[in-house]
Length: 215
Image (tube, rainbow, N blue to C red):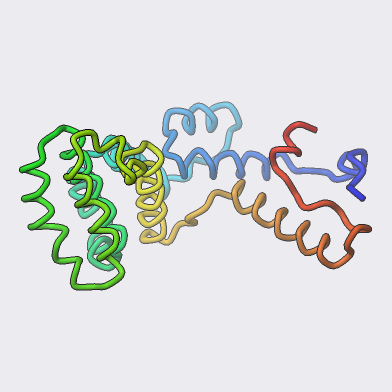
C-alpha cells in the first residue's frame, strides 16, 4: 500500500515555511548571491548572523575542494579558532588532501617531507595507522590514479572532506549542520521505514526520494 497522492492536496503548506527551507539550503551551501536575490524576491528578513561568515565558508570549501588544504586550514583557524585542534579526524583529512595534491603533481619528495612532518605524528594513534599506510602507498606508483587507492585522489573524496569541514564550522558556530531539506527527507525516510516495519505488506513502501521525484 502507498499513500494516495491526492491526499497531499489536503495538506496546506505555508509559503513562509517553504521559503525558510529554501533559505536554509542556500545559506548552508554558501550561495550568497542567490540568497540575496531570494531575499529580494520574497521579502524575507536577511539572516545576518548566518551571512557574515558565508563568504569565508565558501572560500574554505572551495580551497578544500581544489586540494589547497593549507589555505583551507588557515582560513578555518581564523573563522573557527581551535576547531581543528579539537577535531583531529578532520585535521588529518585536510592534511591528507594537501599530501594527495603533491602526489598528483608528481612532487613526491615534497609529499614525503610533508607526510613525515605533518602526517606521521598521527600514527601514534592506531586508528590513523591504516589511513597513513594507504596514503603513503600512493608514492609507490608512477600513476597513483591507477593504484588500488585511487579513490583518495577523487573529487568525491575531496568533496566529502569539504562537506565535513563545512558542517564542522557550522556546528562550531552553533548553527544546524544539516539543511532543513535534508532533515525533512531524513525524517520522512525513517517514518516510512518504521511504518513499513510495523504494518508489513499493509503499510506504505519505504520512502525513496528518487521514486518520489519521478511521481
